[in-house]
Image (tube, rainbow, N blue to C red; front, side):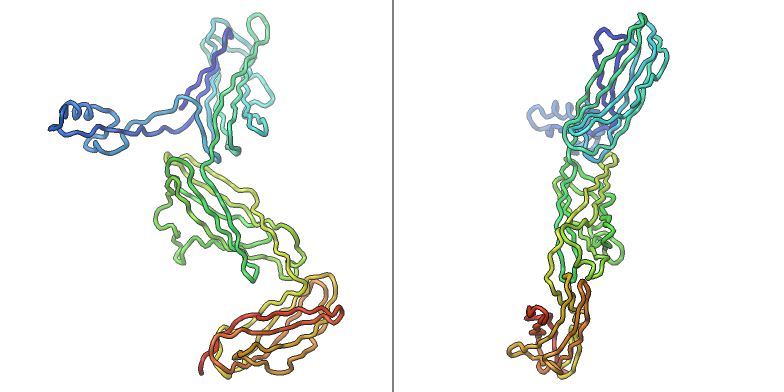
Length: 406
């Protein structure tokens, strides 16, 4: 508990503010000496009388003594600020209609913490009596903040008296969070979150989850198949350490729906919960994580079905999806080329009429291929022409396949 008493001048009432907080362990710096050293016996005797030293553990850097800070001090973002506010009548007169109001002033706003309407808490306060309350607030902004306490009352002369006191404290950042996005060819997104402990003590990480937006489903990749955390048996992150968390996001939209979405997409929010070294709970929730949606071409070709391995001289099929991402109708013709020295040959006509593909829709196309040599081979070359505009789209390779011996 951190006491702070306001000087109220000639007022009949005294205001005291005490922050409710956990104590801290006093570090011990014992003097190390042997009795054979010069003044060794005196130093050893002095060390044994030190109240911060644990008996039989004289070299341990922490003792058994706790201390409380003597001012409001600082607090970390995401923690809960709790304070005990007390108003006492230190005079010899009885006062009436005592009002106690507390507000929190941040860099962006001023918010009431108690008694926002300014109603009288007691109609009469006799000498030696007091009123008090406990205020709590989850800290959500960094930087310097002011706890503003306002007291008003009516004295014995019927005059209304008022005084206001300010208590300043700093809000520090406990964690540094950085994110990176990685996108695969099939539109799956991998989010890497790097979390660094910026406090001077270890934190117990209770929960780090990604709450996805309605556009995505999320898979948490921070657990092994048996359910164990990848961070082994310890959930304590040391000062200045960085832990990396990985999540996979899969779009709920179909490919045709995604082609109509432009600009920036909201992925979700990171929700982080931890405990400090004395069990004080903290929580941070990031703003909406956003990523720039990659602009696709007019005609997108994706492989829907293809084996990864095939035996030589065994014919197989590849299913392609041709997706028209524009608002215009396409009439497509297909030409199949041959990669030089390739171990694959096309089966059937190398020129085909694909047909019409309506705006923002797709068409599936099956191609037959015969492998004639073992090895890893690119599948291509494919040229698609929109005969309505005479525009051509070339795809040198649509994938690879491993061809083995029978």
